[in-house]
Amino acid sequence: MGALPFELKGFENAHLSDHQEFGLKSVDSNSVEGRIDLPLEQYNLAAGLLPAGRLGVATSGPVAWSGELAFSGAGSFTALVVTLGVDISRKMGPVRVGVPLRLGFVGGSANLGKITVLDGYTAPVKLQDGRTFREGDDLSANVSGGLASAGLSAEYWVAPNLGLRADLSFQQGFFDDSISVTATEPLPEGATETAGTERNSTTISGDDPAIVKPDLSGDPVNMEILGGSWGAAVYVGVIWRPSR
Image (tube, rainbow, N blue to C red):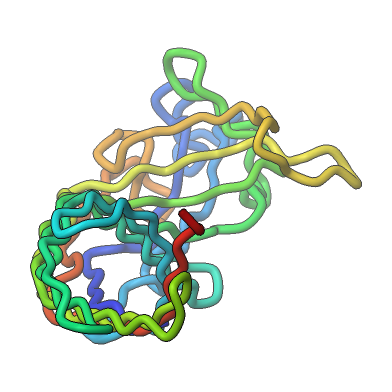
């Protein structure tokens, strides 16, 4: 467990509309325009530390390859950092001190709930190239970008297979300047998602002209996404290695 530095700015409330296909209902009452609310502004996060968990796997030895996933779930928003890298370490008695070096990506995902077309508008929302957003689909908005980190680690082995580890890393990760919005078909009633579950999805980028201002117009929303994960991340936890 630990703390993940995180910031997200630039989300704006918007609508998703197929006005390019069917015209604006605010201009022509006979239009069959479809329109969905995208309440994104509430997911902006000021710079700070999020409580986070981390899972990882690694080889052993003075130069060890490592893969890690750090995550923080705050309500309907999830922050993620996924990295690959190497630990360069030296053993001193029961303690191993190292320098972890990592490259990867930082991401954030906002769960916007089930799609519901605005009152008076037509479902589903049908965009160009056959892209369709249907009522009842699960709607999400996502941001991502690259990340690099370096730091210090210390491991104390209390048994041959069980130890404690503390990490202090300094990371720099920045989001790309756009978002993606995805609709995913829901699971059948009573079903549970497994590793083999296939669910169809439709994704559009944040600069798509279908993402418009929430004033019933067709004016585009030019969101400039800022933020990422930079600063000090701290984790403490338990490590285990299989018997040899």
